[in-house]
Image 1 (spheres, rainbow, N blue to C red):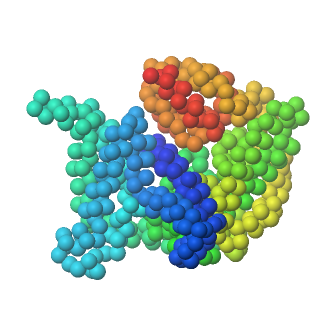
Image 2 (tube, rainbow, N blue to C red; image 1 turned 135 degrees about the vertical axis):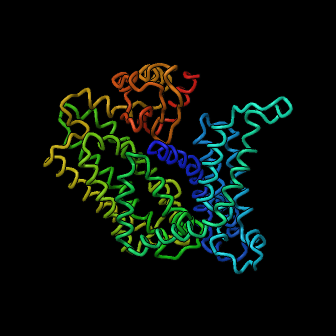
Image 3 (cartoon, one colour; image 1 turned 120 degrees about the vertical axis):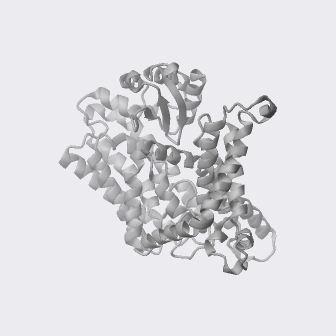
Length: 489
């Protein structure tokens, strides 16, 4: 079950990766003319702003369909396009059969009397998108090799997937017809329960968000607060300009000081506390990872550099993150992101209507950076945490952290070494990746040679399941994954 949810979390990153372009387009639009959401006065700048904001909004308003397609592809056995079509088929059936007008006709009642939950059946419904993606991928995996009698041979194999998906989706519609109002009300209650806690709720969310990263389950938690799963939709409302100024963005703002200043300061503390003989070696890793975190908000290269070497420090880091979200929730500062809380997202989000004193995050971030530096340095010294450069064996440091300084070359050679460490291509069942990790399934986990894999200078290795293995590569993971897929084929 854990492995299944990890795979779902990884699959969520495929549609989420479509959001940065929406943020860039909308940010540029609002930069030209903030009045575009209110109609504005026709003029050259307004026309440009309207053009850009509408283009970005097309993506934001269609996140449900993106989720359906992205999850269907991500959870399929071979990421084949048929699974994407299956997810789309399922999604269209759900949002059409369960929309307000259809439900009213089926029940024989006026549309105004239909439960409000059915009004959420639209292209932006991420919950239905997730369900549809799972149905599409499951039907694809189960029926892609189906063989039918000669008279029906045309519908054999992958052509049968859409048919089965349609049938399963109709059954799902019948079930949701009765339980969707209950599910929706429950999710809303969950979201409102956290929202009702105000700053404390934001802090709890930030704390658990970081704790779930090693398990890959933080995306599931994020969907409750960032998207419209529980009627919170912090991210969607922020970029669409439909939320409340001063409230919307509460579950995003506190990440900016952490990712732009806190973690880079933590890197500096780890560098200063490393053994002198190891400082030169870890400097490349920590510096490049800090730059990556500041500009893009991608934090896994830093987090995986110490979460397993010093789990106690990682818990402290999660607590500090929760405190950052709680404190920022109490301040008159709001900003949002489409990808992650780095400088690029801060810049573009600062022009949106619901941004509130976003540039105040810079001085706040400096304070957070100072706190992170001294807390990290104090904790490392007092508890003797084995952060990068402090291990007893130099080889461990090199193997666990050196890949970030490799640059953009040698991906093919890296993939060859990893494949050898996995026991050869005959032992590999599936190859996939998320933003920073290779996610693999092997036939026999005992054939995996971790020492061999580490010799490729990867950041870390996880074994979340009986036959599952995750290899932390970093921001260049896609290139390694592509090379590995070629070798396996």
